[in-house]
Amino acid sequence: MADVEVTCIRKPHPQSPHEHITHLGNPSSAGGGWIWTREQVIRSIDERTNRFYVLDPKSNRRADIAVVRTAGHPPYVRTHADGVWTDNLLALNQCPI
Image 1 (spheres, rainbow, N blue to C red):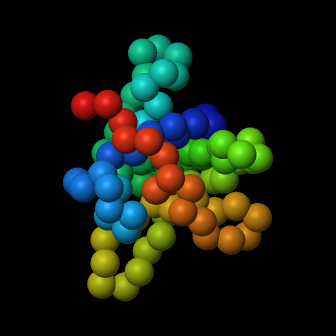
Image 2 (cartoon, rainbow, N blue to C red; image 1 turned 120 degrees about the vertical axis):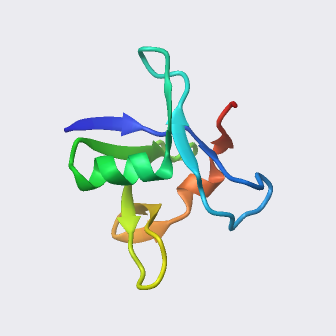
């Protein structure tokens, strides 16, 4: 299983602090970068092919990305650090189009 850093996200309305994430990526990673749909990232986590994470810009601490499943709602991704669910993903810059 590969560790993959996420450095950007896409949301339908970039300025909304609570808008759902549609894409995650790292355009400057080796091999030309990548941008995947939320569903592709969830599938990769579920299949245990990749472990996604973000780095906190202030502390440089790693926060792993996990899948959250709530009854009646589609699954989504969120960071989990030190046993606490956090919003590190929403703080990332928008991925280029």
